[in-house]
Structures are given as structure tokens and as C-alpha cells.
Image 1 (tube, one colour):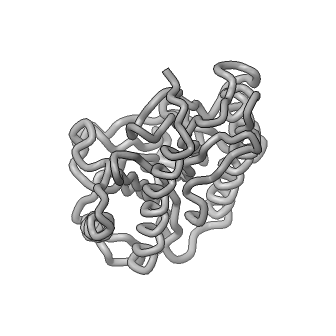
Image 2 (image 1 turned 90 degrees about the horizontal axis):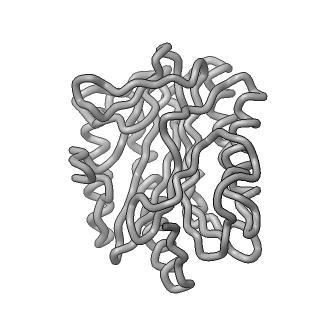
Length: 251
């Protein structure tokens, strides 16, 4: 069931999203070579708690950390460890916050030093796909219009969208209905209505769309072909006048 939020609830979700955005701004200064992903996790948790909020991912279905940090061929759900960032890597960071019982969610892929032009284009196309999906997230349109728009933009650029993972509703819970695939035909699924709050998150692979879970930590998802993947995410609210980006300022 898709939960329709009241204007008051949307403002509470916006407050959580503001902490997500501020957390990204805070940690950007630390996203450098030699820092470990475990240290980034510590900084994220420390900052979120300093705002009187809680890192929403920590403990969620047993996830052991406050933030997901995925490097190069890792798509999402990377578990922070004692490994150092290196020049030439891309690093996707996904942060969720619970504040006053409401949730916000956002993600961004960073570049460490110099990367090849094709990798830069991967990030650019993924970010563009996110905003094109948000453009069609309008009251009266159907959910799959978002999916189709994202897939079309990505595949026209020669990349692929991950099919085993989806965006989702968010707000009273971290994950709510509906699921939002990043592929599929248009004009399918429920009609979008004011008060829906959605996390739209294209996950785009440079090569094929196939992914697999790490057999050791059971969380990290990586591309099967070992090529890089990028991930950008906004939390939005559907309004009578289009999408209201609640994590505005993140990208």
C-alpha cells in the first residue's frame, strides 16, 4: 500500500532529508585518498547523531554500519571496512537518516582523483537519468513512466540499468511501497498522486546489468563483469505542481 503523507509529514521528511544533505556536505572534505571506509562510517554516524538523528541503515535487517560505501564495480550496499580510498576510484555513498520518526534517503557517487573519460560519462549519465526521472514524476502520470525514462536515457548512452535493485517509497519507514524499477515500459503501475514520497535511485553499470552479492559479507552488490557502476538518489514528494526534491542541494 502506498502511503499518502500529509503536508506536515512531508515537512518532517524534509527535515530528515536536510540532515542527509548536510551530512554529505560535511563528509565531502574527507573523501580523499588514504581515508578508510570505516573512518568515513564513523564520521557519518558522529555527524548524524550530533543533529539529534539516527543513521537509518545501522541495524536495518542486520546491516552492520551507518553508511553504504561502494567502490568501482560495487553497485550498492558496500560495507565499510579497513580499506583505504585510492586515486582513480569512484565511490558511491548512500546515507539514510531517521529524525523525529521520519526518514530521508540520498546517494551520490564521488570521483577520487582522475578517472577515464568513459567513467566520467557514466557518472554524468547516471545523474542526468535521475533528473529526467524526477521530471516525469508528476501527479497523474504512472509510476513506470519514471522507470522507462531512466532506462531510455541510460541505454541511449550505451550503459545499462541494474534490474535486481529498485528505488522505493520512503517516509514513515525507510522502505515503503511502491518499488520503483529503473527499467520497464511506460504507462504501467499506479498513478502518481500528491503526498507520495519516493526515493528515485538509478544504479547504472558501464557494462552489463547483471549483479551479484558478495559471498562473504552477504551485503555488497557488485557487477558480474567487474566494470564500474554509479549511483545517485534523491528523495522527492509528488505535489500538484510536479516533484518537490526534498534532498535538494545534495548533487
